[in-house]
Length: 392
Ligand code: AMP
Ligand code: MG
Image 1 (cartoon, rainbow, N blue to C red):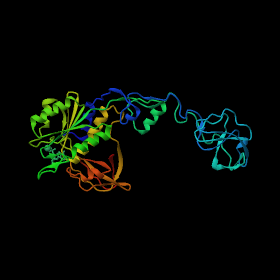
Image 2 (image 1 turned 180 degrees about the horizontal axis):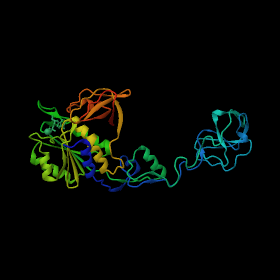
Image 3 (image 1 turned 90 degrees about the horizontal axis):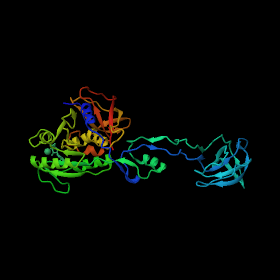
Image 4 (image 1 turned 120 degrees about the horizontal axis):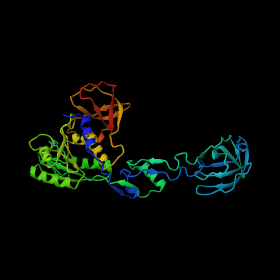
């Protein structure tokens, strides 16, 4: 059976980004990867401007503590001051206003005393104080973000600054969810004695939504081989990725493996991890397929450690890999022969294991801060450094 890193290797080898370019209004581009780099046509700041509300001073002689200087004029953000500052004078200046030509430095208004039409400096003003220099953030021609950068609030500020209101981005993958299980009823229904409500469909929908901002369709199928095969084939024909909940293991009604081999290819089936051992990854034509175990915690964890990266790869992200962070563990752990993904919470400088780690558990999914990855073969003691994937 493959290890987690071997299985990831297979996934990374198989999944090719879609890279179909679309232009979207800036406010609808969140979560999309940029198809082109953002290149600055102008520097930021665009011109030298004031960092404070205060007084612009013209020369070193006029910048010493105790100087009394006449107010020559005013300039606010959006204005222009066309004269040079005269000797023994200051120009009242507001934050963001272009500094008058020849400004030596700016005194903050809290550091002067107003005296009629003059100000008295309470302290000396160093050269260039409180001047935001043109280009001190970036210069014209600089690459602000390479292609593949994902649009978020920060990137949208760069796009707006350079005037790109319809960025070129890659289209998002079309994702569908297939939920299996004769025991599953809609969450709006009252389950019979041996039935349970479908928790995975909406959970996976939200995980996809959180990954790329697109809400996948959900199709619920009974445990009927022919019906399932036909539904999967049809759904794969109009999706880039199908996520299947349940039916991936080797129970009598778990026929996914056989059907996948009839319709397409199985890249791997079974990974030495806990939870999520029965996970299947394959392909029908150009559509990728994940078969996730039906237990909610398994489906959840498999999505976080495999499917999220797969969607990001399809969507053309520059860095689609999960971001692991080293953390100190606050408990002892016995190796179980499979790599363990433990739901944890942060507790001061350490992370602690949450109560129910069984794959049927739902409670911990709502409150876990992260997934801690632990070795399949080596025990771990309190205080050791391990990798955590932060959730949310
Ligand atoms: P399976 O992977 O189909 O063998 O299912 C494993 C376990 O997960 C069984 O106890 C199922 O009842 C449960 N399960 C399967 N699908 C869902 C679902 N959509 N929501 C909640 N539990 C599920
Ligand atoms: Mg089932």
